[in-house]
Length: 162
Image (cartoon, rainbow, N blue to C red; front, side, top):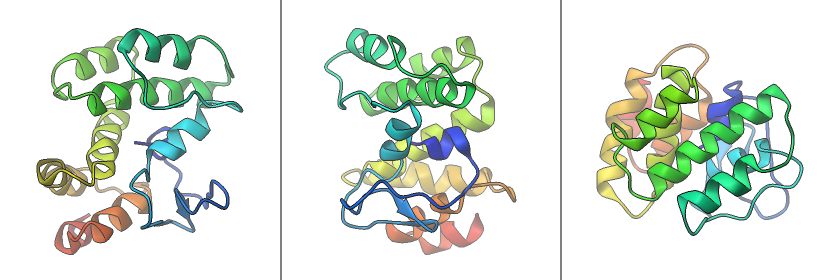
């Protein structure tokens, strides 16, 4: 879920030799953490270890240190939101409440929800959610990695609709 959501600039990124993340806007297909890697990277120079054991640990690790740059703070909020979604909270519950109190825009909220769904390679339900959500988010500034991830997950029609 992603500095993709936090930066939303679609610029070329890479997270090193592991092959995860995104290079030139195309998701790596060998590891499912397409967007999570970007969020962890965007949260600061020393990203917190993921997954977290609890919401309390997540809050302490995400917000307890690291960079206070505005872009890093947005990435941290999106990372905590991603954690809530990844932990199984329905988007309209605690994640929506957190996004509202953290003043995340509806666009960033939707992108983080879509990112978490696209990173869940084991769930057909998550893919269906992303198929429905990503085309609704279509704008000229939508990072290409959302479209590429849909295509990589076997949803070319939804990718083309975005």
